[in-house]
Image (cartoon, protein in one colour):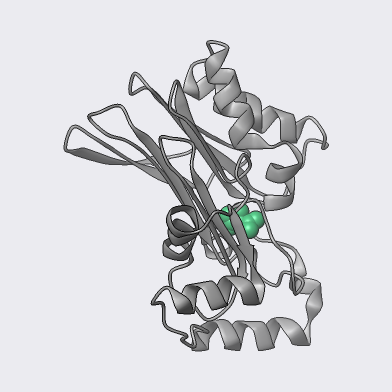
Length: 225
Ligand code: ASP
Protein backbone atom coordinates (compact mmCIF):
# COMPACT_ATOMS: atom_id res chain seq x y z
CA UNK A 1 0.00 0.00 0.00
CA UNK A 2 1.41 3.35 -1.06
CA UNK A 3 1.08 6.87 0.36
CA UNK A 4 1.94 10.24 -1.18
CA UNK A 5 1.19 13.93 -0.95
CA UNK A 6 1.93 17.11 -2.86
CA UNK A 7 1.59 20.83 -2.13
CA UNK A 8 1.98 23.87 -4.40
CA UNK A 9 2.90 27.53 -4.00
CA UNK A 10 -0.74 28.57 -3.58
CA UNK A 11 -1.17 26.26 -0.61
CA UNK A 12 -3.18 23.71 -2.60
CA UNK A 13 -2.62 20.13 -1.50
CA UNK A 14 -3.44 16.58 -2.56
CA UNK A 15 -2.84 13.27 -0.86
CA UNK A 16 -3.50 9.54 -1.22
CA UNK A 17 -3.17 6.91 1.49
CA UNK A 18 -3.42 3.13 1.44
CA UNK A 19 -3.40 3.13 -2.35
CA UNK A 20 -2.99 -0.33 -3.88
CA UNK A 21 -1.72 -1.43 -7.30
CA UNK A 22 -1.06 2.00 -8.77
CA UNK A 23 2.56 2.65 -9.64
CA UNK A 24 2.95 6.40 -9.08
CA UNK A 25 0.93 7.53 -6.03
CA UNK A 26 2.38 11.04 -6.20
CA UNK A 27 0.77 11.52 -9.62
CA UNK A 28 -2.58 10.44 -8.17
CA UNK A 29 -2.07 12.88 -5.27
CA UNK A 30 -1.48 15.63 -7.83
CA UNK A 31 -4.75 14.73 -9.58
CA UNK A 32 -6.57 14.86 -6.22
CA UNK A 33 -5.16 18.38 -5.78
CA UNK A 34 -5.96 19.52 -9.31
CA UNK A 35 -9.16 17.67 -10.20
CA UNK A 36 -11.11 17.16 -6.98
CA UNK A 37 -12.37 19.42 -4.23
CA UNK A 38 -10.74 17.21 -1.59
CA UNK A 39 -7.26 16.99 -0.11
CA UNK A 40 -7.00 13.30 0.84
CA UNK A 41 -8.38 10.11 -0.65
CA UNK A 42 -7.87 6.69 0.94
CA UNK A 43 -7.92 3.03 -0.04
CA UNK A 44 -10.51 1.84 -2.53
CA UNK A 45 -11.82 5.35 -3.15
CA UNK A 46 -8.32 6.54 -3.99
CA UNK A 47 -7.87 3.63 -6.37
CA UNK A 48 -11.25 4.25 -8.05
CA UNK A 49 -10.32 7.91 -8.46
CA UNK A 50 -6.96 6.91 -9.98
CA UNK A 51 -8.57 4.53 -12.46
CA UNK A 52 -11.12 7.19 -13.49
CA UNK A 53 -8.23 9.56 -14.10
CA UNK A 54 -6.33 7.33 -16.49
CA UNK A 55 -4.03 5.35 -14.17
CA UNK A 56 -3.61 1.61 -14.71
CA UNK A 57 -4.00 -1.15 -12.13
CA UNK A 58 -0.73 -3.08 -11.96
CA UNK A 59 0.84 -5.71 -9.79
CA UNK A 60 3.69 -3.73 -8.26
CA UNK A 61 4.84 -6.32 -5.74
CA UNK A 62 8.53 -6.96 -6.38
CA UNK A 63 9.57 -10.63 -6.28
CA UNK A 64 12.46 -9.78 -3.95
CA UNK A 65 10.09 -8.01 -1.53
CA UNK A 66 7.84 -11.05 -1.53
CA UNK A 67 10.82 -13.29 -0.75
CA UNK A 68 12.03 -10.95 2.02
CA UNK A 69 8.57 -10.86 3.53
CA UNK A 70 8.30 -14.66 3.55
CA UNK A 71 11.66 -14.89 5.34
CA UNK A 72 10.65 -12.25 7.83
CA UNK A 73 7.32 -13.93 8.44
CA UNK A 74 9.12 -17.08 9.56
CA UNK A 75 10.89 -15.18 12.30
CA UNK A 76 9.08 -12.02 13.31
CA UNK A 77 11.81 -11.16 15.80
CA UNK A 78 13.51 -9.38 12.90
CA UNK A 79 10.67 -6.85 13.05
CA UNK A 80 12.96 -4.16 14.50
CA UNK A 81 13.57 -1.47 11.86
CA UNK A 82 17.08 -1.25 10.48
CA UNK A 83 18.57 2.22 10.28
CA UNK A 84 19.65 2.19 6.69
CA UNK A 85 18.45 3.06 3.23
CA UNK A 86 17.19 -0.48 2.60
CA UNK A 87 14.43 0.07 5.10
CA UNK A 88 13.43 3.53 3.94
CA UNK A 89 12.16 4.13 0.43
CA UNK A 90 10.51 7.52 0.89
CA UNK A 91 11.38 10.19 -1.62
CA UNK A 92 10.69 13.73 -0.45
CA UNK A 93 11.34 16.64 -2.77
CA UNK A 94 11.21 20.42 -2.32
CA UNK A 95 11.53 22.90 -5.18
CA UNK A 96 11.85 26.66 -5.56
CA UNK A 97 11.66 28.09 -9.08
CA UNK A 98 12.91 31.36 -10.57
CA UNK A 99 9.51 32.99 -9.91
CA UNK A 100 9.86 32.29 -6.21
CA UNK A 101 7.27 29.51 -6.26
CA UNK A 102 7.74 26.59 -3.89
CA UNK A 103 6.40 23.05 -4.26
CA UNK A 104 6.83 19.90 -2.22
CA UNK A 105 6.07 16.22 -2.63
CA UNK A 106 6.58 12.97 -0.80
CA UNK A 107 6.01 9.39 -1.96
CA UNK A 108 6.46 6.11 -0.08
CA UNK A 109 5.47 2.52 0.49
CA UNK A 110 5.84 3.24 4.20
CA UNK A 111 7.80 1.09 6.58
CA UNK A 112 8.78 -2.50 5.92
CA UNK A 113 6.59 -5.06 7.64
CA UNK A 114 4.09 -2.44 8.74
CA UNK A 115 0.74 -3.58 10.08
CA UNK A 116 -1.92 -3.81 7.42
CA UNK A 117 -3.68 -0.45 7.26
CA UNK A 118 -0.78 1.51 8.71
CA UNK A 119 -0.22 5.00 7.27
CA UNK A 120 2.84 7.10 8.13
CA UNK A 121 3.78 10.76 7.89
CA UNK A 122 4.57 10.92 4.20
CA UNK A 123 1.03 11.64 2.91
CA UNK A 124 0.14 13.93 5.83
CA UNK A 125 0.32 17.63 5.01
CA UNK A 126 2.34 19.27 7.79
CA UNK A 127 4.14 16.07 8.74
CA UNK A 128 5.59 14.60 5.52
CA UNK A 129 5.87 17.98 3.81
CA UNK A 130 4.76 21.58 4.24
CA UNK A 131 4.98 24.58 1.92
CA UNK A 132 4.40 28.22 2.80
CA UNK A 133 5.24 30.37 -0.20
CA UNK A 134 5.99 33.40 1.96
CA UNK A 135 9.01 31.75 3.60
CA UNK A 136 9.90 28.17 2.62
CA UNK A 137 9.25 24.47 2.58
CA UNK A 138 10.21 21.39 4.58
CA UNK A 139 9.97 17.62 4.15
CA UNK A 140 10.66 14.43 6.07
CA UNK A 141 11.70 10.82 5.75
CA UNK A 142 12.05 8.15 8.38
CA UNK A 143 9.95 6.74 11.20
CA UNK A 144 6.58 8.24 10.34
CA UNK A 145 5.07 7.77 13.78
CA UNK A 146 7.69 10.06 15.34
CA UNK A 147 7.41 12.65 12.58
CA UNK A 148 3.60 12.75 12.88
CA UNK A 149 3.67 13.12 16.66
CA UNK A 150 5.78 16.27 16.31
CA UNK A 151 4.19 17.57 13.05
CA UNK A 152 7.76 18.06 11.90
CA UNK A 153 7.51 19.75 8.51
CA UNK A 154 4.97 22.34 9.67
CA UNK A 155 7.13 22.96 12.73
CA UNK A 156 10.20 23.66 10.57
CA UNK A 157 8.34 26.14 8.35
CA UNK A 158 7.00 27.93 11.43
CA UNK A 159 10.56 28.11 12.80
CA UNK A 160 11.70 29.65 9.50
CA UNK A 161 9.03 32.32 10.04
CA UNK A 162 10.50 33.01 13.45
CA UNK A 163 13.89 33.67 11.86
CA UNK A 164 15.58 30.30 12.24
CA UNK A 165 18.09 29.30 9.55
CA UNK A 166 16.83 26.14 7.72
CA UNK A 167 19.70 24.12 9.22
CA UNK A 168 18.82 25.18 12.78
CA UNK A 169 15.10 24.61 12.11
CA UNK A 170 15.76 21.02 10.95
CA UNK A 171 17.96 20.39 13.99
CA UNK A 172 15.27 21.73 16.32
CA UNK A 173 12.64 19.46 14.74
CA UNK A 174 14.96 16.48 15.26
CA UNK A 175 15.44 17.57 18.87
CA UNK A 176 11.66 17.56 19.43
CA UNK A 177 11.80 13.83 18.63
CA UNK A 178 15.01 12.90 20.44
CA UNK A 179 14.08 14.75 23.65
CA UNK A 180 11.29 12.23 24.21
CA UNK A 181 13.65 9.25 24.08
CA UNK A 182 16.76 8.12 25.88
CA UNK A 183 20.17 8.38 24.21
CA UNK A 184 20.18 5.15 22.23
CA UNK A 185 17.71 5.85 19.47
CA UNK A 186 17.61 2.92 17.08
CA UNK A 187 15.27 4.43 14.53
CA UNK A 188 15.82 7.09 11.93
CA UNK A 189 14.09 10.37 11.06
CA UNK A 190 15.42 13.10 8.79
CA UNK A 191 14.33 16.52 7.55
CA UNK A 192 15.24 18.82 4.70
CA UNK A 193 14.29 22.49 4.44
CA UNK A 194 14.49 25.22 1.81
CA UNK A 195 14.08 28.96 2.45
CA UNK A 196 12.96 31.71 0.07
CA UNK A 197 16.53 33.09 -0.16
CA UNK A 198 17.83 29.69 -1.35
CA UNK A 199 19.36 28.71 2.01
CA UNK A 200 18.92 25.03 2.84
CA UNK A 201 19.16 22.71 5.81
CA UNK A 202 19.13 18.99 6.58
CA UNK A 203 19.29 17.03 9.81
CA UNK A 204 18.77 13.45 10.94
CA UNK A 205 18.79 11.47 14.17
CA UNK A 206 21.38 8.98 12.95
CA UNK A 207 23.97 8.83 10.16
CA UNK A 208 23.20 7.01 6.93
CA UNK A 209 20.80 9.22 5.00
CA UNK A 210 21.73 11.57 2.18
CA UNK A 211 20.05 14.29 0.13
CA UNK A 212 20.62 15.75 -3.31
CA UNK A 213 20.86 19.50 -3.70
CA UNK A 214 20.49 21.03 -7.18
CA UNK A 215 21.16 24.75 -7.40
CA UNK A 216 22.03 26.90 -10.44
CA UNK A 217 22.70 23.78 -12.56
CA UNK A 218 25.07 22.35 -9.92
CA UNK A 219 24.12 19.12 -8.20
CA UNK A 220 25.67 17.60 -5.11
CA UNK A 221 24.96 14.54 -3.00
CA UNK A 222 25.29 15.27 0.69
CA UNK A 223 25.32 13.05 3.73
CA UNK A 224 22.92 14.10 6.48
CA UNK A 225 24.79 14.10 9.77
N1 ASP B 1 8.23 8.14 6.37
C1 ASP B 1 7.85 6.82 5.90
C2 ASP B 1 6.70 6.33 6.68
O1 ASP B 1 6.73 6.39 7.91
C3 ASP B 1 8.95 5.83 5.97
C4 ASP B 1 10.26 6.19 5.38
O2 ASP B 1 10.65 7.34 5.28
O3 ASP B 1 10.97 5.28 5.00
O4 ASP B 1 5.78 5.81 6.11
